[in-house]
Length: 398
Image 1 (cartoon, rainbow, N blue to C red):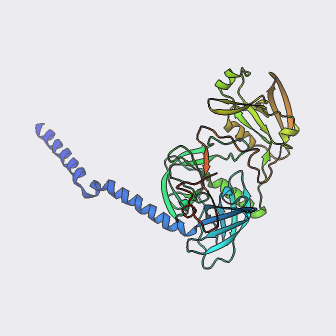
Image 2 (image 1 turned 180 degrees about the vertical axis):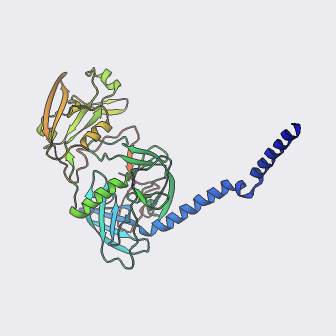
Image 3 (image 1 turned 180 degrees about the horizontal axis):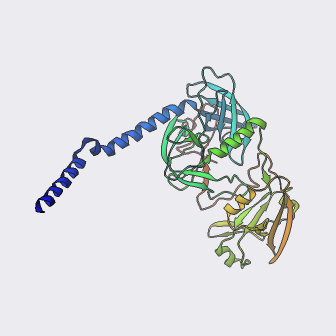
């Protein structure tokens, strides 16, 4: 009996020794690191030839400025996908390919709501490399992400991270601005990276890098590729995307605001702005008229408090955006609101979102983190980079 126990102990020790001293297992950590490194190098080499550097030029009288960003080719016909904010309003758009060719681009269409734009190159010399779209339905938090772009105009580069969130609606935006759910990533996104590809470990595009959250570390956002594919197809076909629109903006009431201003005990959207000529304007929705600041946060008080739409409670941004996604142009929308402490219902006909519409007025500065698109807004000529134009290490982003 004693001998059997001794033999069993010896066998355990031998197995433990093999685990500790077997060369392949001993190098498992470093070997995995090298594998990850080689994978990143491989993906970069595959993706960067189809990535482009974009310079958009703007002029107003004697004033000239330029914006830089990134984009990527999606077919051998020279079609490029990028962010709308990189090219919106530009009088010329110049594209530099990875092989050094510089070509003026034709803008096929811009959708400011999703922040997607489609360009076309003509006269590209040689074979045109392009990237393939993946999917964004099955993305998982923790999944590896790679950002390829042209940070600060210094040249093509790579940053890596993971998916740190899905279906994000970042703070700091008015409800009248782009509100598509975004991918959140830890991969650093710098000015000049906007419009570049966010790719998975297999090299397929899973999103378009679009912004970083100011005042934070490594909280970046990308437009999911499924939205990109849908929008890009419509922009290629017709140059536009038709979207339902009601024309209101505001904030959802907080407990602090409700108590401070003795508001009705109801959750909802406090209307701060109504776009002139919009369905909400035609229906008589009333915006706020009293500008106040509470704990450093600006509020426009005195407007209607919308508590439901189509019979569904509206208590937070996600519910508002989800309901708008079910509407079609021409639908009748029933809105329940509180005005002067009385509940009432109004109806409006859902309209078409104006093309190029961003917001009614510039959003006021907020102490909370704001979403910063990662295009670089400089001045001077197309050839100038942020470094050459002396804009400092970060310059001015909008």
